[in-house]
Length: 181
Image (cartoon, rainbow, N blue to C red; front, top):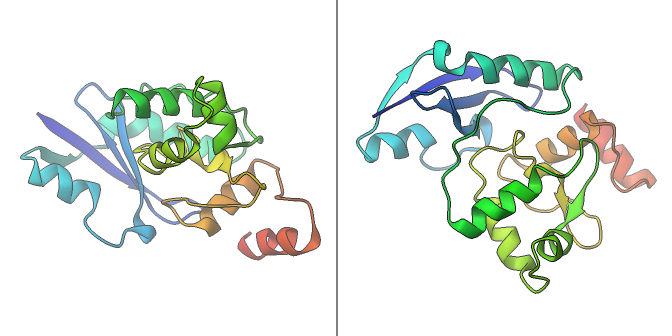
């Protein structure tokens, strides 16, 4: 079994893209945010051959470039995220959050029929292997604040700003977002 990688530049810094042999997206990693082992290190530790090959990652590269250019609001690439049944449920619910909108952890938990599971939703959100495409950046704290994002809060704010949504709409937070643009 092999995985195929490429790296693209983005407004959030370099992104590592990983696809399987069928061209299904398995991971996106914010390379500037990595503090420990990379997804490539983890794959190799599991004896998975990792090859640089844009033939397997070309579709997602194109879709991400369109997203960052403001030309794409929904992704069509096939996904192959691996996680627990609960994580997969959460990630499916995240994909239902419309472009430019947000939900909080409690709202996601309620949508899943588990209103007391907001912390578990937060943990699943944090384990999302395919950020941006599975839009975990669209999940905020109960009070609307930006919390928790594997790519860093600056990138979360940038992604939300790119989707034309300033958060919340008061002078301090709007100024914070403008500093990232």
